[in-house]
Length: 467
Ligand SMILES: Cc1cc2nc3c(=O)[nH]c(=O)nc-3n(C[C@H](O)[C@H](O)[C@H](O)COP(=O)(O)OP(=O)(O)OC[C@H]3O[C@@H](n4cnc5c(N)ncnc54)[C@H](O)[C@@H]3O)c2cc1C
Image (cartoon, rainbow, N blue to C red; front, side, top):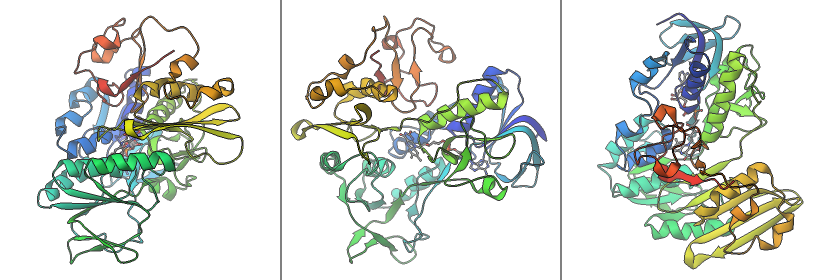
């Protein structure tokens, strides 16, 4: 291992690898070293539920072949966790005691799954979290000997994991603390409709429940709820949120709140130390989503290179459910607080359609779209632009409203398409040279095997941008 590198990156998740890629693309030959705690090369974390369900093989979720790193001059040390950061000495100390000095360092250590200390017995055999490929492998192996599972947490990740376990043939119960599913992404009415869809898929749902303990002697046998009810499950999966892995930074004296505090250049409070992705807190927010990790990684990398680029100003939260055959997208402020807010809804239970548009002082700031995929792209665009829709407000609760009509501008000859997972935009004028797609290639002509160069999403996960 080289004892010195110009650019050192801690973590080989989406933020770390995208930053490394930006560095070597902008400055070929730049000495870039990635130190990675996991023993696997960068894989698509968001595809772990599909891997668990058996829909994707392990090699299919791996992002780049090992050769790619060599070809791009990026040195990756796997199974090589950083144990200590010394900002004054410009060096990091690895778990085995070796040291690497740097000129600029990026913390991209991501986040860990929260295991609530209020639940007793989480150390029992058969209790899991789903964060890493190794977690998924362990869950898969354990599930083979189990018939029932309890999933604690009815957020996006818990539901995708529940669907995966169900696909493996287990009877699954999801237990949610809040009175509704997807409390961060849905409102009361949207969650009601969504719950009916989840239950129709064969998954049992309990909401408004407090988990007290994991039942069973040594091995999990279920979950005991406050009030005495017991939910059986030989496999218990906890999906109760994330916590930034900011311990290294904290121990080194960097400013840390919920994550490592960064400014609009993704600089931390220590000189030459940057942070991006789930580990970073910008303007009071730890986003915990891929589009933010990708945007932050790019700005951080350019800042590390000293390139004068547009500052990071925040990411509009956009989350999409990728399993269960339900089209659900939640963008921006969906449960707004404060004044000046108007909400417009379309509810057609029989069609599985729910649309909520949130205006604040006439400007669109959030939306929930269930069963309305066609409007995802134009609505996202309007929200990102902070468009004033007050003049069109009387149309917003029309079922057939086509939001493309509300987006201004002439349509380009060849449409651009946006990835619903990471926000990458496929621009036919540029093509995708890395994927050997020549400029001028329309999205519709891309090979079925083509995947998003940022996050590996398939073509089906792209939506047309109406511009
Ligand atoms: C199952 C699942 C599904 C998800 N689905 C979606 C989705 O559909 N859409 C979406 O937007 N987001 C999704 N997310 C969230 C998304 O994956 C994260 O926001 C994203 O991975 C954050 O990227 P990151 O690079 O900051 O951190 P991570 O992906 O967590 O990567 C950080 C890496 O750093 C390593 N590391 C940690 N500490 C050290 C150390 N001391 N030394 C060296 N290496 C270290 C870790 O081992 C890890 O490999 C999902 C997450 C999970 C777990």
